[in-house]
Structure formats: C-alpha cells, structure tokens
Image (spheres, rainbow, N blue to C red):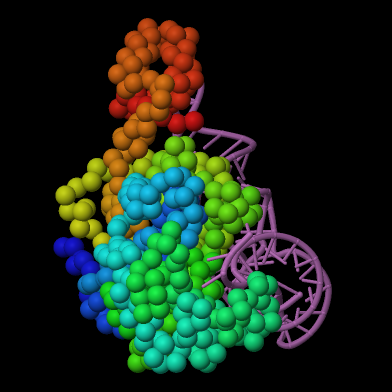
Length: 467
RNA sequence: GGUCCGGUGGCAGAAUGGUGAUGCAGCGGACUGCAAAUCCGCGAAUGUGGGUUCGAUUCCCGCCCGGACCUCCA
C-alpha cells in the first residue's frame, strides 16, 4: 500500500521556511491549504542564463517539488521580463530586432532549464503581455496619492508608504542620506522610483495616459503577481540581490494599490553563487553559462552541486565541486544498480527523514546526508533502502537515469564506442583465461587511457566511463 | 561609510547550552592474478578577545576576515 500523493493533512510534516521580512524561520501556513500560490522573479531575456541565475531557479524548483508533495494544488508563477533597457541595448549592439532577441533568448532559457530537469512554472507571464495591468495599477496609485507625474515619468512616492523599508530592513531616512547616485531633479524624494517612463520614438513604448512610454522594472512583477495570484499569495522568491530595491518596491506598490491585501505572506531569498569568492554576475564578467558547465559534467552533478549548500548560504562554484558531486552520484547509482526499479516503486513515498530535512527550510545538505545513509544500506543489499533512495532522488530531480546509462552514457567526442569497449573486454577475458595477464593488464591500461574503467565482479566484467 | 549575512577537520558541508553529522581527500587492513568497486578501521575542526552560565562551538559585546545590498542602474 502506498501513501497518497500528496500527503493528507494528518501525515503532512511541518514545512518551515525562512521569511526575509520576519528575518526568521517560521512554520509555513498557506493562506489556502487547498491551493498554495508562489511567485518568483524570472529572467530578463537578453542573454543566456548562467549558473548564478540557476540558483534561484533551482531553489524554486525544490520548493515547488516539496510543496507539491505536501499540498493538493500548487500554482507557481514565474515571469519573463521581455522589456528592459538592457534588452534594447543588446538588440542594438547585435543589430537584432528586439522581438527576435527576446524570442531567441526565451527559447534558450527554456531549453537550458529543461535540460537542468527543472519543472516548468504553471504560468509564465510576459511583461509585454501585461502592460494594461501595469497601467491600471499605476493609475490607481496616482489616484490614491502614492504616485505622481513628473516630466513624462510616473514615480512612486516612498514617503506616502510608512512601512517602506520594512521588508529589506532599511531606514528610509538613511536611504536618502546614503544615496550615492545622482538623484533625478524631478523626484520628490531620492528614494522615489519609476513606475512609467517616457520612450523616444526609437525605443519600445506603449500609449498611456502619461504619453507613450514603457514600464519601470518593479511594476511588472507587481502587476503579474496580482493578475495571476491575487492581492494576497503565499510565497514570493528570488535572489538576495533582488531584496532591495526590487522586492521592497514591489511590496510598496502592491500594498498601496491593494490596501486590503497582504501581497506576499513569505519572502524567500537565496544567497548568491560565487566564483573565486565573488558573486557570479554578468556585469563582473565572471559567469559560466549553463551550457559551459554541462559541457563538462552531467546535469545531475550540477543539480547536486547546487544543492550541496543550503540555499541561504553562499556557494562557491568550482570544477572540483562538480567532480565531487559526480562521484557522489556514482556511489548513489551503484547503490541502485543492485536493485532494479519495480513498478510499485514509482508510487513510493520519499522516506520520512529525507522529507523532514527538506521541510526544515529546504535543508538539502541534510537531505543528501540521508541519501548517503540509504546508499550505504542499499550497497549492503537492502533493497528497501535502494527503493527509498530512488524515491528520495526522484523528489529532488536526481537519480532519474538507469544506472547503466549514468555510467556508460556520456560518450564524449573521440571516446571509444560501447562496441569497441566490449570487444576489448572479450579479448581481455580470453587473455585472462589463458593466464596471459600481461596482455589482460595491457587492455585495462589501454581502456583506462581512454577513460574507461573496468570492474571484474562475480557476474563478469563491467565497465564505466570515469576518471 | 551604512545595513545585513557568514567564519566548523586538508576540502565541501550539517547540527547543537552538556563528549561536533555526512561526503570527498589521506592513512592502515580485508577482498582482488592486477585493478575498480565494496567493506572494516584510523587520524583530523568550531577565526579572535572578553562576558553570561555548573558548562558555549551554540547566547551577548568588541575585534579581525569574507560576502551581499545601498534605488533609472557602475
């Protein structure tokens, strides 16, 4: 008998999440237990996504996978920002049409995330398809006295919102004092930010009550979150670099526009991915695209690497870390190899200790430690442990290949074919029978040179690709 | 400069007011024609100075070090 999916209330473990606004880990209580609603800030589509970007995407992926296990219905919304000055600039540099650029990079984003075994969002709105919603919000903010027009711009008046700064823990007074950027003369307060800005004829723009223009960045997410999730929803997430100003501003706009709502009930922020101790970012130029990494290691190794630290800790990307993750998966797959998946395994519930670790603010390192314990037992012949390991992996998007495919599947360029390898194994077997160990060892060395490792076991010789 | 987060064995990375997981690497052994894998065993850590406490790695303060953010946009 298998557990129902998702879990019934009585058997549901408590999920705790760190909420940036509370600045504490708190038990997660959905507004509606029958329908959990999440919003994540998606990419601005002008370039390939890099592994730093991937961290927020993976955190969202793990979170939604866990929530789907716990609750009957989850709606996950992640937007595509397809209007932005960086897009306009890139299109100009490339000599490419803006629409062509955003179409192309959106497709690349989808392809890369799909390659990473990320579950797609339920709804993926595009900014350019939601201009009317943004304009409606802006009109309302003006009507309510939270926004004003100035020189063709519409600005949000931070002074009109007493709790501005409450999310990111900033004092509005200090924000003004600490402003290091030249403040536009038409702003009432240095902290005021643009909701709508005028577009010259060569820039993308839409007609509006304030003239032809384009939206500010922050209003997009507020409008799309409202359209698809309502005035109050459960979780809003993104990278810690979005906490201020982006999320602070979203919150201000949304709460001022819909004073009866609560906007996001929990705010999740993942720490940055570092390279050589510095944030991986486009502007620093120290980024690796997802494709760069997948050219050198399997998808699951990259997923595991990104899960090797809890999402709120910074994680330093290294190639040796990728290699270590690959080796960990080698062991896990070895543990599975002895216990083929049975039909009923597909419905098997992930083990309680594993799920409990994930429910503790997505503690993936602890969850992985549980997988190590299961792998150890499975290697000792415990088939139930192997099935548990498989169920655990499936929940977080790992161990989804056949062990043989994992060990033999990555035939790189110039690699020996399986047929060639097996012919050499036959030849070696004959040599061993004839007790010609020099020849047998010669073949082993030859294959080793080509990245193929032989393993003589009780049931014959097996091989794998490795280092 | 301001705000926030963090500093755990060689490395990655959990946890905790009362003898600090897990993995990688290393070392010894078993197994193996040789290997690989697996198994058994070993060594190895709480940045620093104070304070609170019977007891602090954990709580508080200072210091040092690292990272992130500081608003149309380097």
